[in-house]
Image (cartoon, rainbow, N blue to C red; front, side):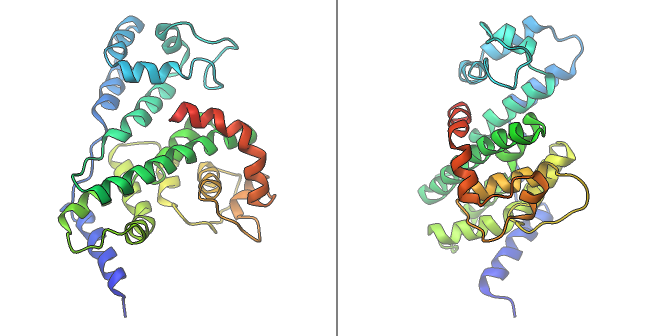
Length: 270
């Protein structure tokens, strides 16, 4: 027999699958920049003007002026130079990542707190992803975005709960709902946003620690390992993702090994 918690989870999931609950649109700023980048007539000067019109976004991007994301070995001295050296995909990903924090609004303090907690976790996961990508040679761009978006499904779920006043608002209940439903809802959102299949797959596999697959390490392996490190999990045996990535030491040891590099990326993504 299904438990009350199982029944609630299925009821919530069905609301989204039937289109009765709101799936968020891609953030407006990300859509605007994406359209500009897809238009061959867009000049670097025009792109610079548009981004300078959003001072918080411009300041965020300038933080990456001296990081491994950029081609070249010297820091950028201006936004225009930064945009010229960033790849189109890199820029689109950074703008999307910056815009996500503004997608959630709620009048309920408990739901606001749950979102803030999960957004902090997402930023830390993305930082771990960046460090792991540098260690393993996987795409740094995909890694950061995959880390930020792995738990994106929690966002519409917490918004939908405003219409379910009988659902308890304690932290454990909200956490459990998000943990169980985030992967399915996240894959639904990112499919609507037409993001790369590797990013969608890494979101769909949220929390599937024992995931196994043929072939070489992929983005989902990296994001799962980053999530395990960020969540402070401990394992007696290495996760399958660790074996794929060639990082089979105990998680606590790996966490300590990455701590110095992690701080740079945490500052950038904050």
